[in-house]
Length: 124
Figure 1 (tube, rainbow, N blue to C red):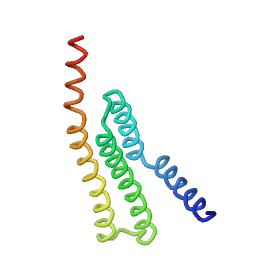
Figure 2 (tube, rainbow, N blue to C red; figure 1 turned 120 degrees about the vertical axis):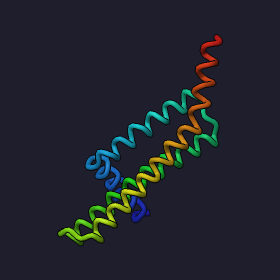
Figure 3 (cartoon, helix red, strand yellow; figure 1 turned 90 degrees about the vertical axis):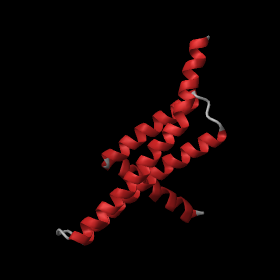
């Protein structure tokens, strides 16, 4: 049990590091909070919540992994190397793919709900 709490402490320290040091992580966090608030207002179903939480987790995880890869590459290859650049660019591509996917999923989850919400409020 002690190892679990040590691992949990290290993971939380990693989240804090990424949050403090990475502007894009903060941006993703703001959008995630906004999406959660809007989902609560729109009364998402359990399935919609599951999809939303999953995609938020994917994007935030990709951003954290991107940071880990960038730091590791900087450590092992302090001088410019094309392979190091390719590794960092590939990690950034993973974040971009996840972020674009999250926008598409967000559109699928939110647009119809927002339209119905507006229609419902206008009719009252």
